[in-house]
Length: 231
Image 1 (tube, rainbow, N blue to C red):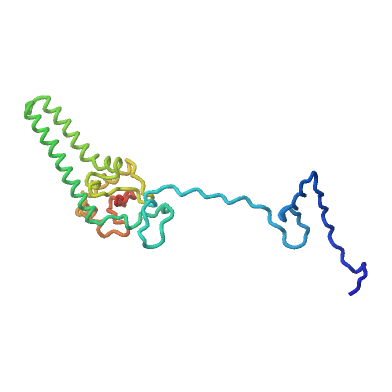
Image 2 (image 1 turned 180 degrees about the vertical axis):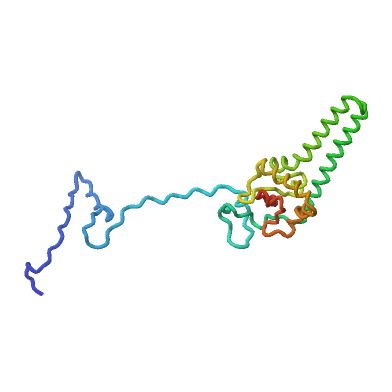
């Protein structure tokens, strides 16, 4: 190998070192990320900002249910259009039992109002003006109870006395939220035209016994509602 200086490749200049000043050590060399790219080798990446933490999913009654141990854990609320976990659906017998209790409660309330109206009319005289006024008030109360008891309880408390006794709750199918008053009203009032069709009223009540996958009755399907178990 020749020692001719002309054949030795040139070396890059060494950056000057700053002498210590006033007894302080020289500042360290800048990091590699701060060096400009010379055109040789891979281009260094620029410093990236830290990743933003995504916001948490909105709370949902369906998502708040504990993991049962079957399948992957539920880490986020179901997308719109997906119903509740099947573990939240009550057995059909429980729904029918709650319906039976509600029927007994409604019949007792109607009987008390009708009996009270009869006693008042007998006391004031059947042909008097007061008797007719009492009859109008009582009939209006009977109509309001018959048409408004279940919609109001479903909207305000998530279920009637029978459903609350059996720890059931009526919610929207897509997100598990409480029904609006108009939806609760439609859910109940749609049963009246069904009752006019032979056997349809009975089929509506029993439909949850074989419906898949959410055990809905026909009046549930009419307004996209579902009955779940409270926990």
